[in-house]
Length: 121
Image (cartoon, rainbow, N blue to C red):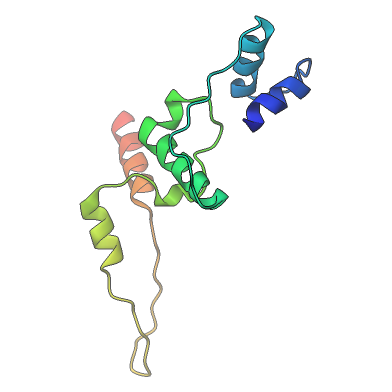
């Protein structure tokens, strides 16, 4: 509903998001956007934001006019097997006999992107 207010305030503004622009176009032809409430009676705003973020994950950011994925997007859609692996790893504890070493963490999506780029070349 805040998006409607923003669109109404800046109806002549040139600098707007695609979502606000769509709302303005709807308002300009004397119609009103339909508000779809996915879940009502939530206890707090954080829960609502988490739900919104989950919906964006499910629907796909590319199919919506949202500019960002939502809060805690790093906790979004994932394969169950990967989540089990990530959450069941043992925590490393260093002691006096531990050798000197360096850990480099590379995200899987970065590896996939590099492999894709190598295949293109």
